[in-house]
Amino acid sequence: MQSTMQDAPLLISGIIRHGEYVYSEKKVFTVTPDGVEEATFFQVAKRAEQLAAALTKLGVQSGDRVGSFMWNNQAHMEAYIAVPCMGAVLHTLNIRLFPEQLAFIINHAGDSVIIVDASLAPVFAKVRDQIPSVKHIILHGKDESGLLGETIDYETFLTSEPAGFEWPILDERSAAIMCYTSGTTGNPKGVVYSHRSTWLHSMASTTTNSIGLSERDRCLLIVPMFHVNAWGAAYTAFFAGTELIMPQMYLQGEAIVKMIKELRPTISLGVPTIWNDVLRVTQNAPDADLSSLRGIVAGGAAVPRVMIEAFRDRFGIDVIQGWGMTETSPLAAVSIPPSGTPDDLAIDYRVKAGRVVAGVEVRITDEDGTVLARDGKTVGEFEIRGPWVTASYYGVDDPERFHDGWLRTGDIGSMDAEGFMTISDRSKDVIKSGGEWISSVDLEGTIMAHPAIFEAAVIAVPDERWDERPLCCVVLRPDASASAEELREFLSSRVAKWWLPERWAFIESVPKTSVGKFDKKVLRAKYAEDDLPYETLD
Image (cartoon, rainbow, N blue to C red; front, side, top):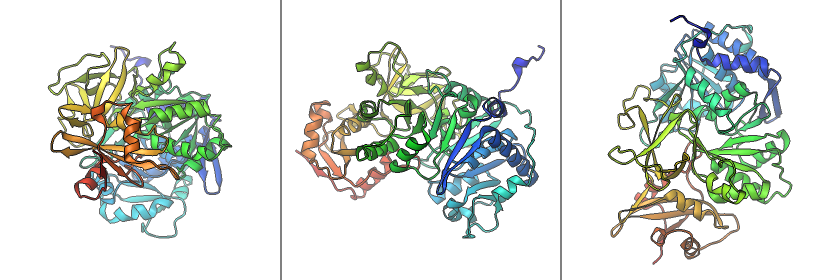
């Protein structure tokens, strides 16, 4: 069959060319200690061409892995463009991993060059002597410590080459980006995204049935660029003409509230722990101005109903809950109520994990693989497939996760006939008590509705009579108080009687993973080591 224009490959370079010329004056803002730096899409794209030329002269070839150990900033965006568009593979490194895990993924991926933000040099120095594949370190910013030994200055390196690098025509199925899971069980596993999957994921992110990014938006990108390509928003921005605000290391509630007031984003992406901190700050700041936001996107963990209600009632802001995984690029489902839903019922949809996005298919199965009914009641494990869902891990066989062309997600829940997913728990977190399931997610969300509670995490602990029972770990708000008896009484009218926890621990903070999720494995380990004091009610 004769080749036509319809056979042209879907490449990241095509996304960038579109943003560079159609939205040339749109801007990337980077928050720094000295103020806010700005650059247009056109300028960022041209600097990316210079970076690609310099990397080529350094010896980086097609398929080589170039790592980034960086905050969300303009230079990171330049690497996002230059590395995959030149045919190499960008490996975004999680800056919060333990040194042994960081060294593992660099060596496993075979990174040859790594770009490091100078402020992170002391962190990266801990693995410098454990990564033999790395030939060059490019340092972005000034670092007088010398901890990394011989490095290449990013700005000198980039500006030594002219713009005008010609992006090659690549196979759209070739690797563009790789990202490792956060390693909550065992070593992190590598997921590789192709040019084609990235292109299609970007397009899906612009639909109004998903996040709906457009040229009318300015996005405060809080979710790290090392975590699932910043949920795809970096490339979608050039696809849709959405301006980007890069917060770098300023991720505390106070700093974020200030950014929203001064830089006026229309949408922002971040994990629920971030948004909980924003609510904390605004409670004591009556002049907090969030009026520019049309919505916030929260994902990575279940969003409590009380949080969705707080943003709606206090600020008129919709919380858009998203569900996905590193393995799914991550967009898979978004919690937007169906057309015509009365206002008083909308929140019942927003607390769900989301409605399946066009482009992916989701089903629920029982333990033997039987496909279960989509009736909103039957509970099983979610499985997913689609053009931006990975079919395997990089260099690792894991047949337990992949079968019959479907990815087993490890998430347990139900799905209704309209495609809305309700997640009860992660398979490793669900509590099996007396032969029945208790959802730690539902318990946490309900407990956090108590006015004295800032955070809550529920884990399963052994029980002689019931096999497992819930242990509720709570963090009180500053200047607030509540007893275990009071909290259980609060729950008693809101959950089934046999769900009510007997064991309660009052802790200073809930441990977090490297991407800001509750780290329940730390709590389980503390319990196993008798290092988690708790009280037991009758």
